[in-house]
Length: 614
Ligand code: F6R
Image 1: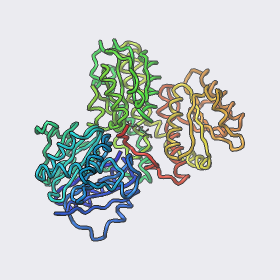
Image 2: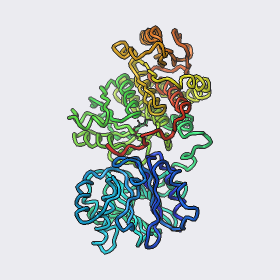
Image 3: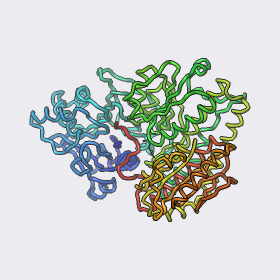
Image 4: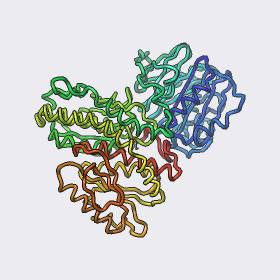
């Protein structure tokens, strides 16, 4: 939530700042603003709405200045107006601050600062930090770093803060607590951002800031201190993502590009996981054979789409490894008393690695004594750093707010974990594991096949564009898939959509089907040899059809389908791999519905990619 960028160096700062904000707009797009550090005064411009509004309001003859900060906002405190847009300043207009996160004690700070004469001009929690920093800087003889160190000790909540002062504009000072901040090391120039995507065109050398660390950045270099004021040695790493993968690459939307990148993302996540002697290689788990054999329970915690990957984990791990799996919504988990012992493994799934609900759930689980394994797509993000072990997915940067390729790779990751646990515990033979792994290697080609034949589905989708409600039904491992289909549709098309277990609809929700309107129902026909399950789904299809639903069925090639108005065929596969294929047409359906309804696909209303507030 909220994207932050800072630059200091020889370039005209406006270019890296605006480019950086464009790359970070996925984090929030309620408003955008910049503060440029001209000597003795700040040039500030900020506008409600998307970045283009800010760009449109910049004067043609922009002052050429060489340092500054920029912000793109997902509103928490205070509506998305010009006034509440960041940066926020002190009363002299010389100190500017941008912020990602929430200052929980802002009202108490505000009252205190007002009592000392500070005048506030916004409804944000952030503005109190600008005034506080201004006071503290004066008391430290103009030292912004010392002011930040003192300020942080007064703040509660989660935040990344970045500040600049007009009297020393080349110095940018930042801090982070439970919210990301990465530094890009250039040649005679340096960058700060919420995500490396912001400066990937300028440098591949990065430093991740630790919790409660304060960074002072000038063109000449960086220095980092901890809360105790002692110097911290920066830990540099190389960025492996390239700039092209963060661009649209000829597609009309990032989401479409990311849907089409799924064969590669799945293949990259699978690659090299079977050793020559037929064992699933998952050293990242850092668990001995004895520890795996002693496992009694797995708890998966995640949010949104990642939670659906967690539900899929339950089906595969219970089936293959015979370990009981509980799946928990992260934001709920931390408010319960989890029953955990040393034989419990907690798996946290997160694309961004920054989702605050998931992070807090991890901390809760760790405090209760659990071992935590993260499945994550973003290197060096907070969730992997706070976990005992991490299995990285290789989806590459996911920019569209709606998650697509990250989900498929999360499913691959849980499948690999399931196979590994089953193999170590002797629940599957090496030959069975090899066969299943080899079948997984065919999945990228099968996804490609689906994508090559997607045009008729896109055309069909457009005929449903005026629907007010779309229902989805699935059984067994198809159930999380339909929940995902409904989530994608709500998120992108802004219409009422719900996913149901096929057998559950008749217990009340079938009343939603409106014969006059021909409510669309999308059904996933289970695959595999267990015919009782697909027969039951065929009965469910008849039930909704009899009540006037227009039924679209997603079914494997060769499967017999009765009662469908339209059939979307996907290649055949083993039942437990079906989600990796069946999800794809549902993503395309949601994408096309959003286009048909004139919605912003990559940046749906009210949302942000990385949800770093609770
Ligand atoms: C929906 C979507 C969200 C995320 C959720 C968790 O398309 O993207 O539901 O899945 O916010 O995000 P991560 O995986 O970054 O923890």
